[in-house]
Length: 334
Length: 165
Image 1 (cartoon, rainbow over the protein chains, first blue to last red):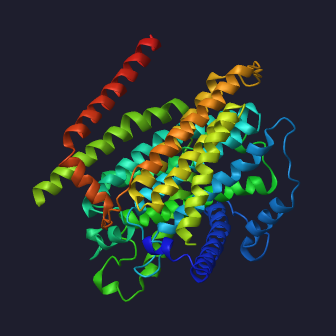
Image 2: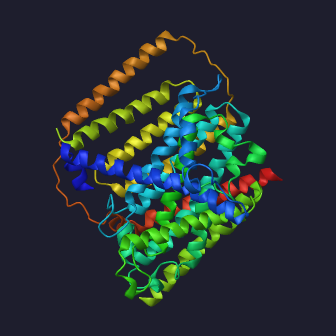
Image 3: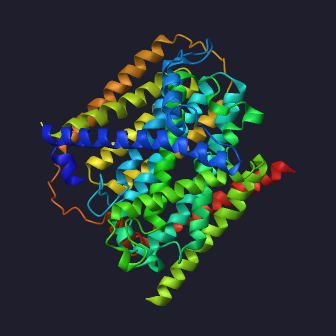
């Protein structure tokens, strides 16, 4: 980071811009085919075909959907607060994209090697909530406001167990640096953090799904009660931005889970390490993404009062106990 | 002109601008959003000072605080309330005089005091250094603050429980 600030020459700025554009392209491709994959998987789980009309195997379905969204009329309600209404999607999207900078893909392929990488991720992802609340409030619509409120309540209460469950991993590694966290898990799948930190992993996954606002925690946009929640008044590309930031967070959470618990780019067995680390990362990453889709297709939605109870009365104490147990065990083993 | 200077200018302008906007805005949502701009710009200045840990903790704490503040702003205030400021001429004149006086005092003090240039190594692993200092040299203030915060937390729960009955 020191070097980054001090060498802000034209060359380094354009290099950073190029790398960012490349990452944006990768993320957009991921989102396009993530949505396609999600609809297919949910279709198969529910004994349907899923999209299969547009293009071969329906591969162009999302492309067509996005195109439709982009050429739609951009509607802003008359009584909406226009500035805040326009700011909402932007504030919600920028942190979603910015947090991707600290995720290391292999030991050489990463964007930023921050000493406080994990803290950076956690801190910036919290800003998105402001965007959602701004959008919900500015729409001047009861359902949108309720959706925004629910979203804030949910994200604030689940952020705490999410962060505290990561502390166990940080204790095991002794660093907030994502690359060092992965390096601490080298040597076979038994040294991945998922096994010593299985409780933390469970809490992390539950809290992550809640942070993503996905089923079974999709109360902020519960169609049957709130129409669509905070983005009910949005259409066209502003709606697309809200959707995009949700899917970019799926990318980020899948990457983060891989880094924190599944050993990042390390192979599960030593004799399999001839396969490059990037491939391992992608395999683990895709299984997390599949897992998220699988949960969505399987679980019913939680009731709103149960949601808060689960977050504060179950996950939070459990994650605190996990920290104590981890600290004690680490001290005894030392 | 270094990149550091450009970013310092940018962050200080947005920090002060956010604070001024917060005081001048009429609607509570705008005020809170301007406060958020100030807090985030301060985090940017911390990054420039190589205090990354502090910077991201600042964002972590204030992003949550801002959203909670927005909720309270929505729930506890009237949505369409318009408020006419009474015209108070004397008040404004004295306010202006006070601001000028304060600026003069600050300017004088800053000009008078010497800032010895201390060069220190920037710690490589700041988080670790902070942790070591908190748990060795500053352990008593740290524990006192944590007791105070725990008491506040328990107090909030007790008050909420009493009202629930």
